[in-house]
Length: 626
Image (tube, rainbow, N blue to C red):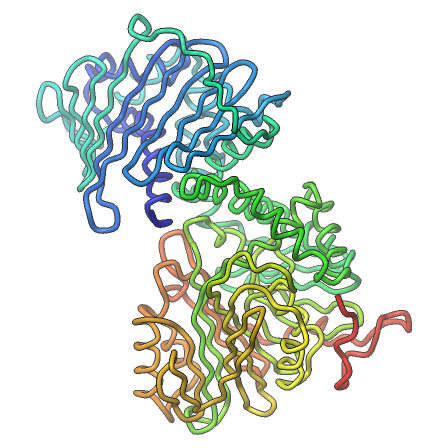
């Protein structure tokens, strides 16, 4: 089962969750009030004893597939939920004293016990309000029902029906709402058809629902605190409602500039740009103060929404995998980076260790890249393109930020990243060095320097392509990564294939069995059909490539549908062009914003006192070792 299937499950679940609210907002016929009464009993909270069953037929990955869901409640704090597909299955059972998650196809189970705050819990009372974010399109409907209370739900429904003019009743038991067809087969039996998707929904009332059974004795279940187990699910679903049904605050965020000690936030076009300078603690504090909401969304995307999807896909508790990676990677991370992360966590108001663990997540990225120069370009300049193809489905674009950072004692640099992350996956420094990475295989080989840490160290410490290459040679590496390194001063570049055991460099014009014959004055890295198309474009425009054509090289289909950001570095000029994905369009289809390093004088400020760690020039400038 692939990730697109898992995220369609998120979408299906949320659309079922909001289906009643949407129907209520759109249906024109007064008798629909009585037809929807069984569902209204549940939504309003009037009924504590019910069972809901759904069968969803939907095209996923080019073929029609079936998903079955069932939810039962028998009063109090108890419910059972099951979700099943040919490739996955999950069961959640909650009782007064414990919560159990079972993954039948993976033969794994997790049980949570202990105290838990209502705001983080799966307790049925008020759960819908906790599962739907205030930044989701669904929130106004949920809020209206919460405010109306049990007694006022019919009045609210009737008012909505009377004010709506968006739908028509086609037969005695069928309504057309946009491209959605609702049919009531029998009391409590509904069929909803939208495009190629069909949902059959059945609501059983109290007399047909027996008391829920005791939790099964799963002796090999992994024990968690109830707080971690339930909060992961609640926060994961709540963040998913923002990702799949984003509201105005996310689709059109308020573009307000801000300034704090050692930090400044501005907007260029639709892009967020943050300048940070000072000691690690000062940089981390300013980062957290300027981007508190965005960093929290980023944390939820990874630690909760992605974690739940990963649980469905693999049967593994994602936090445990991250903890394992962290334990092996942490000894190789410079203390200055850890101090910055901890200071940021304090400013955000989250557990410092949680943010430290989050920052090893980039060990999973995948991408494409190229560098063209000299005879390949129209003016001889070096153009370095970097395509980040990675999971727009978890909403990292809501936290997209271009950072311009000058750490005390180190040189200034730009990194295109995300609120809450301290490492780099795409960057350029004031010494005209640019770097981009492409993930490969080897997940789990974590006894080395995290990729994003190594990238940031190169930006802080290296002044030439030779220094970057030496840093990679002498550092313990993780997993399998491919890179493009470039130096605008000399118009040189290198492609890199690195594993923990070996490292290989490919120069401009050099061929490789995985990349094809060499192209003069070009380094081109990608895979499959994307590599073929990128090579074809470079060869077609060879000698005529300028900034605009270099950006065109990164357009679809070289960039994937999951294209999170694109960057074109012109390191000789100190310029980078940045495009970030939106909620419905990949980065390659979004406008690029030009960012010139010289517009940010903080990047070039001289050290203010003799206590700073070292000068930022000279070949021996790599300084602090991890």
